[in-house]
Image (cartoon, rainbow, N blue to C red; front, side, top):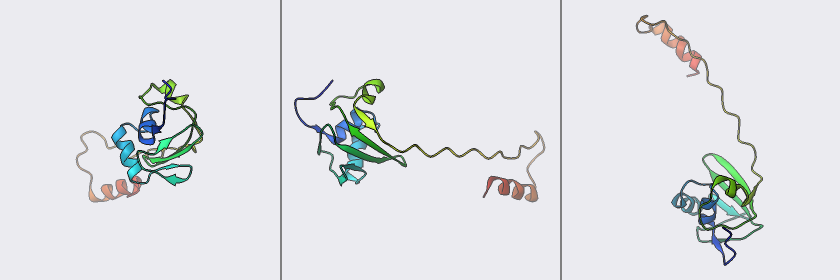
Length: 124
């Protein structure tokens, strides 16, 4: 699985280790400036090597990984976890769902006053 023969493109590497779902999404993220290697924004064809710090901003979260192994082909999750050291901050906790008022079955449409109360409960 190791690609010691030569350099590996950054878009291919972040796709191979399952940080991004598709390679075209990885290339788009690079072109959009969402991928940095050692603090520099890079293009999709930039070569990545062991020891590089890759910062990826994707899906509202920043991932910070240090490359430990190069791969060219997409690998399974256990093998992908061996290819980098994850230094990412913990994801923010999910917001708990607000319990909305439940109307009795067959009670009909809410009145204007009841609708306002429901909207106030939902935080709108």
